[in-house]
Amino acid sequence: MASADVIIIGGGISGAATALGLVEAGAGKVLVFDEQLPSQRLSRGNFGLTWFMCKGANNPVYASWCRMATRQWPEFAARLEEETGYDIELEWTGGAIHAFGEEQCRAHEQSIATLKAACAKVDLDYPVSVLSRDEFARMVPDIEVGPDVTGVMYTADQGHVNPLKLLAAVRCAFQQKGGKYSGGHSVSAVVPENDGSITVKTSKGTYHCAKLIIAAGHGSQRLLKPLGYTLNIYPQRGQLMVTERYKRVLKIPVLCTRQTPDGTFIIGLSTEDTALDSGVTLPAMKNQADNAVRLFPLLRKLNWVRSWGAIRVMTPDGAPIYSRLPEHQNITVLALHSAVSLAPLKISRIAPWILGKDEASQISHFSNERFNV
Amino acid sequence: MFKQQNEQEQREMVSVTLDGQTLKIPAGMSVTAALLAIGKTVSRISPSSHKPCSPHCLMGVCFECLMEIDGIQRQGCLVEVQEGLIINRRLNADEGERS
Image (cartoon, rainbow over all chains, first blue to last red):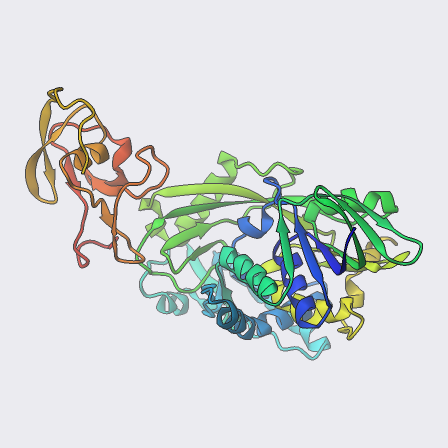
């Protein structure tokens, strides 16, 4: 039987970044088993924002967690690029959410006031403001801003990234540092042993480890159920569509529309309760295309070349789950959306916590048990 | 580089305007295939790399043969050749907003 110090089930952005953090922290022999299910492509299907704005309005701990993550992003990206040679295309060009009409502008003002107050309670600033239509138009001089846009909520302290290259770079760095990544590798059972170790039964044999991390998205439930444990997560679909490449005219990502350095516009802002169906629908795409064209009329004349759906791992309060199983403290579960934005914290905060070296004050607020009241 | 499968076959040739020049291309196939057939292997200039692109798939998937046909930017492989088409590939870097 093969053995390891740590096994991670799930090689998406969260699993792979945690694995990287673990090898860097000297966790010993670390293995990642990635099933690569066609239905579970959330680390590939996402929008690619590194974002904190608007997150945590009713949860200051989550707000501070998101802010901490984005603050670490530029250095995290620079280090990944230096170590792996991947250009993950991070652009630290801020971020905006548009408003159509005065009512939406006032809602933006209100949201900012709420989050400023929430962040102040944990000694955190919230550097977000509402810009007028003209102020925003001057920031994106190469693209026409639609006549219905009345203003935007804006921060300079975030950006966007190529999530595919991020995933590749994180896995690459993990393997460069001695970690073992195994793709097409399914786990069928997790069996805690009496001596405190864990047996992991897989499609490629049985393994033995001292610590286990389950970061398998919606696949985690199947592994946890025999242990009498249920994660408080549900599937939420987002649909995305991309246009043909066009000369670079938009450098600031907007929540529903961004242009990549390759010239592609990515459009997407849908949330649907569709279980694990990752398909696309005409009404949702029409709705977000209408919205994007209203924001940037140029998009009307571009060809739409691809679309896809991806399934978020959503929690009842929207914040992540980082939990040790109460009866098996050496099994940790990670279940979250926004894995791109939160990726740096997997290395700086989650890996040290898993190893029992250091626990960031926020982590205890993100236990799965918070929902069991 | 590209040859007709049956060289004996005499295809009908029709006149189109390609990048401002009138020329004959074979009918009964897509614009992209017809341009390949007369040796025009560059379909567009990439807006990101600014390098020449050639068609990959000829079946509507790769979008490498996007070109302006009768005023609309579209995939040449999905448009059948017709007499009088006006086709602009905009191969010069300073030509048009897509390049």
